Length: 72
Image (cartoon, rainbow, N blue to C red; front, side, top):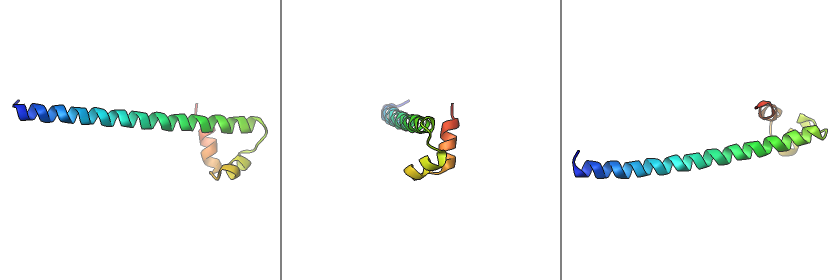
């Protein structure tokens, strides 16, 4: 492998690593947000709110709430 190829590979490796880190952070934030919504919906259901009323309050579908609450 010539020096130019080595340099290109080194630069690309750093780019790929940066992209991987960014993607990991985004996924972590997404998962954290989902967990917070799930906890909030679960608390509301436990306090007597119906899925229908929760959906109305947060302008989301009842199906999306049910799916989220069904996740382990």
